[in-house]
Amino acid sequence: MRHLKQDAKNARISTKWLAKRVKYEAGYKAKVSSWSIKWDLRANKLALKWDRRAERSEARMAKRALKWQSRWRRREVIYASNWNAKLSGFDKKLVRWDKRSWKWGGRRMPFSPSIPRPEVVYI
Image 1 (tube, rainbow, N blue to C red):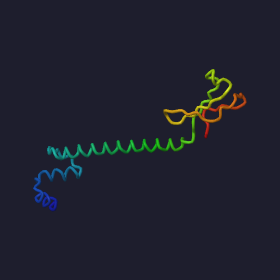
Image 2 (cartoon, one colour):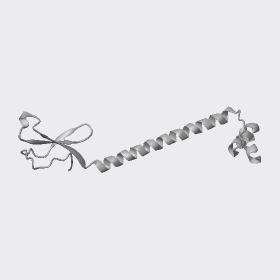
Image 3 (cartoon, rainbow, N blue to C red):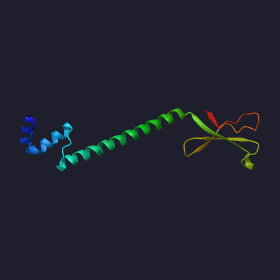
Image 4 (spheres, rainbow, N blue to C red):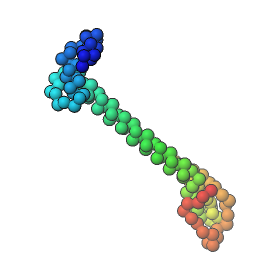
């Protein structure tokens, strides 16, 4: 406590405040009227809160990245046969490119019921 008092004198902090601070940090339920301690604690709480929030969002981003890594070769494919008079008798393959866009892929092969049409094709 003595060296703390010395520090307090050097920094021109009231020793009463310091004693309260030390008590508080030691875990005593001292009734702290000093606004600075309350302010400190509040700031600490906020910092922790934001830290946690950042951690959570980081975890979320990592998860998303993993998902996309595992999914990047997997493409949704729509076999669009007879969806238009112009295309009747032919299969046009629509491939899901990203969340927003589809692209035409594959040969425009003549329609054959023997060819299985999976929802998702690995390209």
